[in-house]
Amino acid sequence: MNERDNELWKQSLYDGDRAESTIAHFAELIRADERERIKAANAPEIERINVHLKSLEDAVLDEREACAKLADEIDPVWESLSFAIRARGNT
Image (cartoon, rainbow, N blue to C red):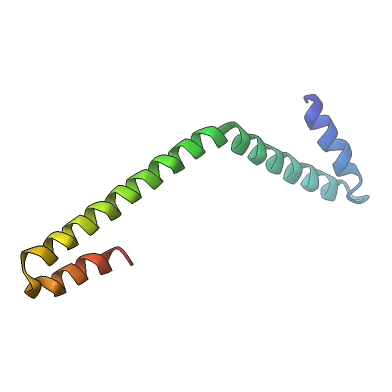
């Protein structure tokens, strides 16, 4: 076991006096620690992806609005079309 695992083991010993309880608590501490380590290691990449997704969503909204404006300009009869195009972005 590494130093961090030893710390978690010592922490789990205070969870009760039964061996099953200690082992189960130790396993949960290890899982939680590993989840946090993975999240921290991947945080920059996740943030980069989220920024990219936001820019794609914004581009889709801009394109949708451009199409709706074009429909408005072509023919006022198409107003229901531009309404439908805009409504598509609100779903």
